[in-house]
Length: 114
Image 1 (tube, rainbow, N blue to C red):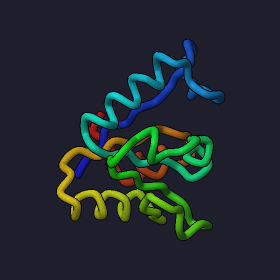
Image 2 (tube, rainbow, N blue to C red):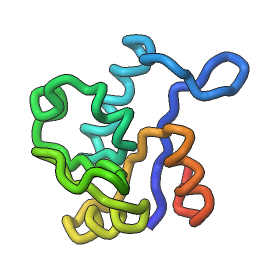
Image 3 (cartoon, rainbow, N blue to C red):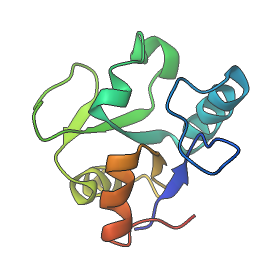
């Protein structure tokens, strides 16, 4: 199973280091709701206030090797574990919010489509 990569980029092609602009966040919400899921790194995810209110009932997988449980979301230790979980749930198109460290893990395993 391949994954869609969503990234907030700066004009010079680097990953945005701060919270993306409202337009970018609106696009992220629209895309993640359309496919019914998203995968995020733990540090990025903890910036989301009230995730169940923001995202409703979509499936969220947070990648973390140090934290084993986060209320309301699935925690996985690896990209493959996240993808396996979503596939078992019947979701056909995983959606990954790019953050540098996690993106490297997905690229290294050839798990990204676009």
